[in-house]
Length: 70
Image 1 (tube, rainbow, N blue to C red):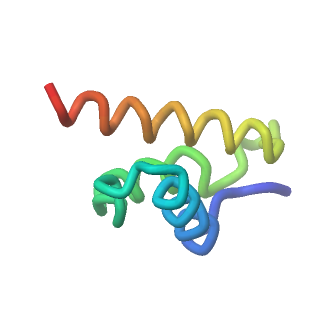
Image 2 (image 1 turned 60 degrees about the vertical axis):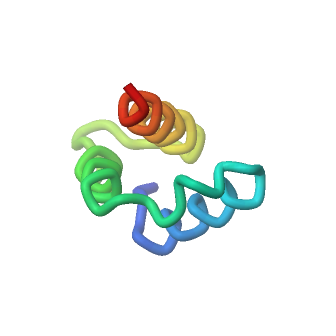
Image 3 (image 1 turned 60 degrees about the horizontal axis):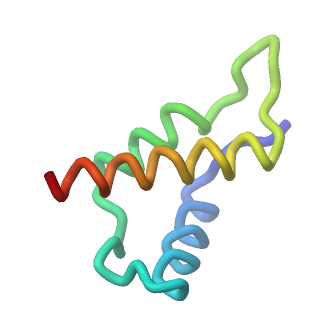
């Protein structure tokens, strides 16, 4: 079973900071809650792969910050 944890979100924050998205850090509480709501539990009877979580989280994060600037 693969799920997203708060520790993994911290690693994501660090990664985005290191690649140049310094203004995104720390992630807002509502963004963290959304990520955990979507990927914090397995969608029974299905399961997430690490790639599902990585790509899905990336899309949520970019959508969140792109919509904040409008």
